[in-house]
Image (cartoon, rainbow, N blue to C red; front, side, top):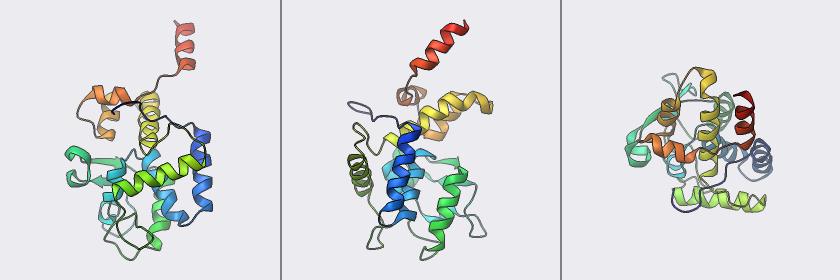
Length: 192
């Protein structure tokens, strides 16, 4: 992350964004774009490169795991990401209207693969419309990493698990994504 990092989205911001995309054109596609960012931590380039074979199981149903190969990930950081139930439902709804089980998951209005730049611009348009200043296409990813880091202990995992889900080579990179919480810090100090 160069410069000022993208802001982390509050739960209310995510709900507002999902309501806004539900009102616009291509609501099923747009919901998937948001959830791939917030619930799977995908980068704009990874959202644009995601294809149905990476999402579907052998029976042609949305799998419980996204298989993001190295060729679709930044710096070859391919990985397997468990699919959040909300994302799974959105992918299943989008798949019902898809032209087939191959090709890009996210299509432009002209039914072409959306580029990473188009995804970045898409997020900018919605964040501007919602007056979410300081947010970018990376905000959903930062939100995903921050929430995963805060909750990983409940799942019996460690920051290493968050690093692997994010596709980072270095734990230092993962740490740079995590936003601190002054409320949590106060609770921690009181608990000491």
